[in-house]
Length: 82
Image (tube, rainbow, N blue to C red; front, side, top):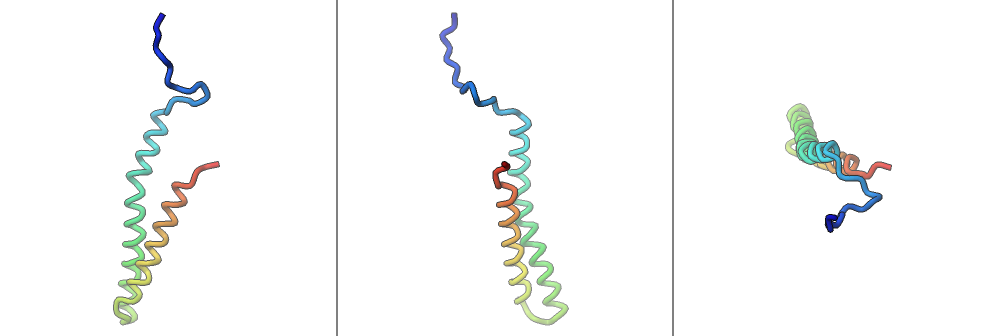
């Protein structure tokens, strides 16, 4: 008889490769999502500044909106599923 101990709990299934792949994809995708939101907000503000001749104010405001949108999107994707 082997005297090996079983380290896995009886009620917890083994971590599946598909779950690992999903977590890896999410980890690689989130930085691009965040940077994209900030960049899109900044570009919108930049073009509005050029069109309305308002200086860097709208670029700053829309960049902040993009930052907030990026944070909210990351929080939404990392929220536990019920």
